[in-house]
Image (cartoon, rainbow, N blue to C red; front, top):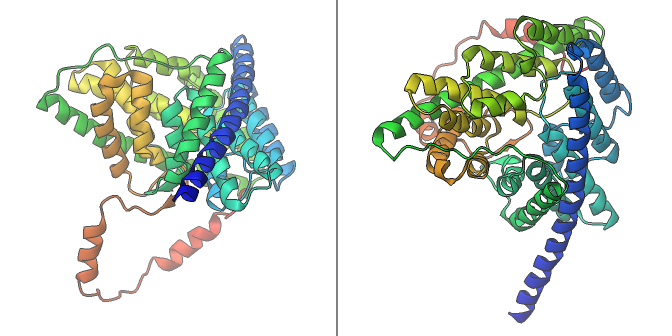
Length: 442
């Protein structure tokens, strides 16, 4: 018994120091990334039509990503999820790409987020440390999860939900409890490092929260359903433009999609507003403080984000989700005649839960970003939005071992007699359509 306790104590001490090391290194990387990103975006903002460079930038980013060291392409959250689930490492070249390419994309006006680079670089740093320490595949994987958690925690200033997001986003229906302690240590440490280095975060404590009533609770439930539908819409828009630009690059040269996507974003900026380009955090902040959102604003942000990624831009998706969720919540608040800031905050976390399949992290994030008063309503909205989206996710490499409450339906269908097979007249047509869509990006 004593030997077991000693081993457990040494195990805790070991992972405490390892997670602290990862938290410090990833926190420094987060702060460096955010500093360079702020420097470039502020510099670009001095030029009224900075987004006119988008066609060239998309070609440049596509060239650096696909043509320079083409074997090193783990510069997206999706790729890192796949690597971690496959017990593989993220190369240092991929980490460098994940650091610089999103900065170029966002500074030029691409609608992308800042969280993926930090999480990806975190995984890369952790993977390199694991190689130096000659860890086995299992311990290396744990350390990489700590790097992802630290990256999310440091970039948004949410140490607990950021750590849980790194655990929850990998595998729907399974949380890696064995990594929870070091992930928390890494997330908290990264947050402390970035805060000490002067990084500012988006905090909006909700000043208004109604006394609990059945009427308001029903409105939150309905809002959760709507947020789930909006999550589905966003993921379908992403999928559509991904297929469209893949088909476009298949029919033309690989760089043609960059020109087309850049011109499309220029048109959106000139026709509507440049606010739908870039990070859009200022607009998200404004909505959270009471500025009215709109359906058109939500749809334009969806389209600009999908076009950015379809055209070859590199970055994250969580920051655009915040924009979309805030717009959706504010829009619903006018319909339900409730406080705009409250429903905008609910939209931010509920749409995140629906698109990422991470309701627990999103619920805790609501507390860290908007205060404890919103916790019960945010939890309900996040879970409902999560259930609404089924097995969809904006991270297509997630593993799924949870069918969101469909066991009884499946058992009932299994008990029914097998239906007669009918000839599928649509099969030849579908096969022909599939041949038109290339299976690999150029």
